Amino acid sequence: MIWLRSLLFNIWFFVVTLLMGLIGAPVRWFARQHALWVAQTWAALVLDGAAALCGIRVVVIGREHLPSEGAALIASQHQSAFDTLIWLRLVPRVAYVFKAELARIPLFGSLLVPAGQIPVDRGASFSAVRSLLRGADRAKADRRQIVIFPEGTRVAPGIEAELRPGIAALAARTGLPVIPVATDSGLYWGRRAFRKTPGIIRIIVGPPIPPGLAQPALISALRGRWRDAEAQERDVDKSVHKDCKALAK
Image (cartoon, rainbow, N blue to C red; front, side, top):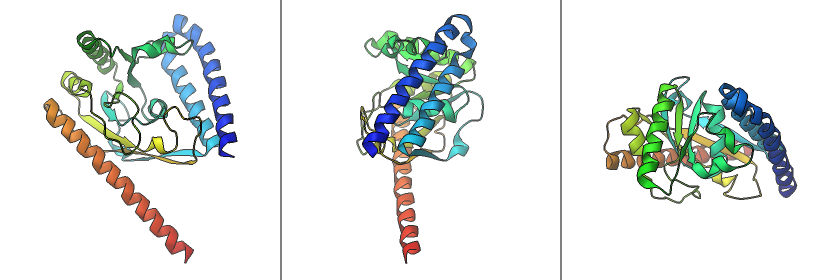
C-alpha cells in the first residue's frame, strides 16, 4: 500500500510541476511580480498531495520564533526535498539560498531567480560568496525571509555534517539574528527515495541566535540549538509513547 501511495504521489508531483511550470513560463516574461505566488502555489499543491496520498503531515514547534513579516535569516537542517518546499508555506516571502545549477531545470528552474531566490555557485568560492552576499542584500531590502541550509546538502537523520561558512557570512552581512531550525523530515521523505512513509514531520524552531557572533561561535551556537531541538523531539516521543500506554490500560 505504501508503494502504491508513493507511486500516486510521484505522478501527482510531476503533473503539478509540469502544470505550474507551464503557467510560470509567461509569468517569468510578463508578470515577474507573481513568480513567488506560482512557486508558493506549486509547493502547496505538492505538500497537500503528500498529506492526502502518503499520509505525511507537519507539526511546527516554536512557531512564535518565526517572523510574520519583514527580513529574517533562517538556518535549517536539510534532510529531504521536503525542506525545500515547506518554507514556501511557513513564511510569507521566502528567499532560498539554492544551488545555481537548479536554475537550469526545464520550465520551473527559470522561475527561481524571478521569484526572488538566491543562487550560489558552489564551485567558485570567492565569486560565489560575493554573489550570495549581493543576493542577501536584495532579499533584506525586499523584506524577505532568507532560508539557508548550512550543511550544504541533504544529510540523513542522526548524521552530523560539517557546516559551511555561508551562514556566518550572511549573518555578518545582514546583521540579522539567526533562527535555528531542526527537522526529522528524512525519516518520512528520504533523500532520493521513491518510497514515502506516513508520519508526522516535526519542524522545531529555536530561539534566535543574536547577531554579532564570530564564525566559530555562531557555528557552535547553531549546532547547540539543533541538538537542543533534537532532544526536544525525543522528549515529545517519550511523552506520546507514555500517553499511548496510559490510554491502552
